[in-house]
Amino acid sequence: MKKLFKLLCLAALLPAAASAQTNFPNKPITLLVGSAPGGSNDTFARTIGRHMQDALGVSVVVENKPASGGVLANALVAKAPADGYTLVVLSSTFTTGAAVRNNLQYDAVKSFAPVSMLARGPLLITVGNNTPFKTLPELVTFAKANPGKLNFGTSGVGSINQFASEIFSDIAKIKMTHVPYKGMGPAVNDLMSGQIDMIIASAPSLLNHVNNEKIRGLSVTTAKRSPIAPKIPSLDEYGYGAAAVDLWWGVLAPAGTPADVVQKLNTTIKLSVRIK
Amino acid sequence: MKEFFLKQGASPDAMTPAQFSAHIANELARWKRVAATANIQAE
Image (cartoon, rainbow over all chains, first blue to last red; front, side, top):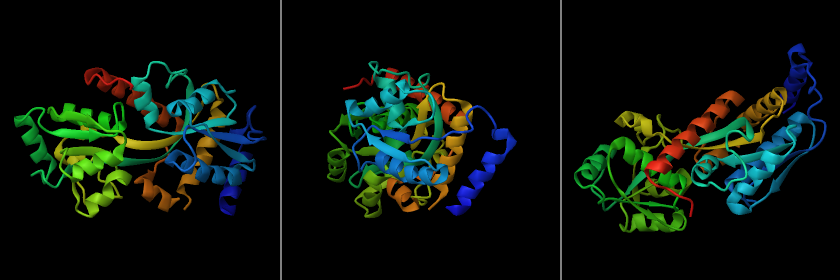
């Protein structure tokens, strides 16, 4: 941490950093989170918040705004002063939500100055043990011969699970039937009991069941294999790289935030995610 | 942090602000196309 602090002090002395905003930050920074404490966005915010505080020398406060399906925090940051002191920590549901909701009080692209991605990970394409499919091409061959016969479960309409399943069907040129559930838990139970055939969802929802051989993992949804499940093939290996999808977490500032402030936050956050 | 990432099934991946902006804009355009083709509407 001391080393990081020294690095940042050095960086601050470089003439290239000189500008009207070199005194940033000189007051507390607020990280808004659109969910209640304990979720992944909240944990990311609290973790990077601690590192930012050490590196920048001002307090960094996490504020939870778990209203309006999580979009209130985004709206508040879109309207906040564009000075780098109010930021939002969010995940890839930011773009899936913006694609299906037309009542948002912000434009997902025009209202924000993206600061930095924090992390990304794959979803897993899984099938029930009662299906005959051992590889992704076997599933595709069956689905092509039997349009609409395979059922895929999701955590709901408009979820990342549905987007990932639809884009895979589109690229693989197959038709499957959507079964929306209220959350991933019941969907996974129905996959294990054979009520549905396939689920594409995050590793935290599925990987344990794959490792315990309760379901089969056919592919990760990223172009390359993932370090979290290195034995599971990637979409590129089967020629479906165009269907690649990842989950991500990141930090956004309001549009119009000065470029040097965004850059300083980016550098600080980049270092904070690399620290163990 | 590493343990937390592992629990999320994610790995650290920082981008420049410009790369992250492009990522968000591309993804939004792609999801809008998928939402239109698959007729996905908010519940």
